[in-house]
Image (cartoon, rainbow, N blue to C red; front, side, top):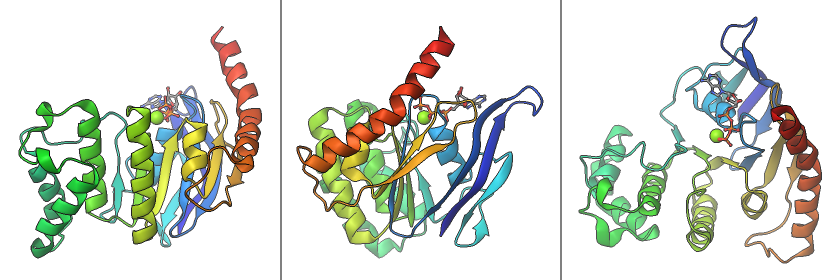
Length: 258
Ligand SMILES: Nc1ncnc2c1ncn2[C@@H]1O[C@H](COP(=O)(O)OP(=O)(O)OP(=O)(O)O)[C@@H](O)[C@H]1O
Ligand SMILES: [Mg+2]
């Protein structure tokens, strides 16, 4: 239902612009957990922004339920890369979630329960009355996560949402995200440059090449039940396979940068 067809993206004027993406195609299935994995600058955020309708393609198309995506849609939701950027600084923790529920027209009688559940989930229940500026960076990020999940979008677009969290909090967020995903049946497109994170979470992992003209080197199926044992044989095997694809890519980009 999320179809990416031969997407190409050039920044700047066509003649001397920077071709970030070239020939990206994939069908993301309803309810799938799909990871975009690749080195810094390969175009992960660009592709996610295109799927969100925030960024235009230069050619090709993205469609959602058969309709071409050309603007940000109500039933999709975006995570921003830097924590805190999308929170409203003059609203409290609780009000930030309520605001999102109102914008998304969630019936008012459900607000109380949703706010409580989601703040508990990310351990911010005791901080309801605080302003974003009174929270730590990790807490702000958890608030963003709670808010995005609270509106139950059909497709959740997450751009390195846990990158700034400490390892323990990140593992807890992984477990919670998987729990919510399994309960709601949402489709998730998740950007990361962390191989282990992709293996822990994804149904499929798209490995992207270094740009310019970044494309999918391979799409790997991770056909293993969750929670996944990070000490298991499949883990080492998948990790090795991905590393083998990415190592020459990273060398190439390092060589180019001199
Ligand atoms: N608005 C823009 N104008 C020109 N070039 C851009 C613009 N946005 C991104 N780029 C370039 O496109 C390429 C892909 O950028 P993008 O942000 O999508 O990478 P990324 O994979 O998300 O990187 P990171 O892991 O560091 O977040 C980069 O080379 C970047 O410099
Ligand atoms: Mg990015």
